[in-house]
Image (tube, rainbow, N blue to C red; front, side, top):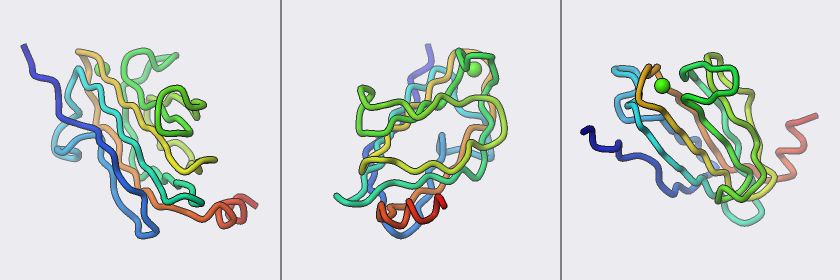
Length: 133
Ligand SMILES: [Ca+2]
């Protein structure tokens, strides 16, 4: 029986851009099956979190029922859901309303794809609003 992948964690979003990968072997091997990863990206109080996807390839299904990346506007799964994503083509850049974002990546036991790579930074809310215009 396969051991579950080590993944997820609590990360601090900074003004400096940082990278997040679905799995350590991103680019060399598909993500592992049976993944259940949760990352919290937390910014300083008064700052939001900005996510920009560089690459995204997750097993496609009409309701993203097999593998998916789910994003929440807060630090846990009770926060408003920003979306559930699968398939290919990166989601649009995403800006949190609060000071944290939860990413939940799930994969089932068959058909593993490339995974995802995103960049994240913390952004002053005012700047975020400005960028949306
Ligand atoms: Ca799968």
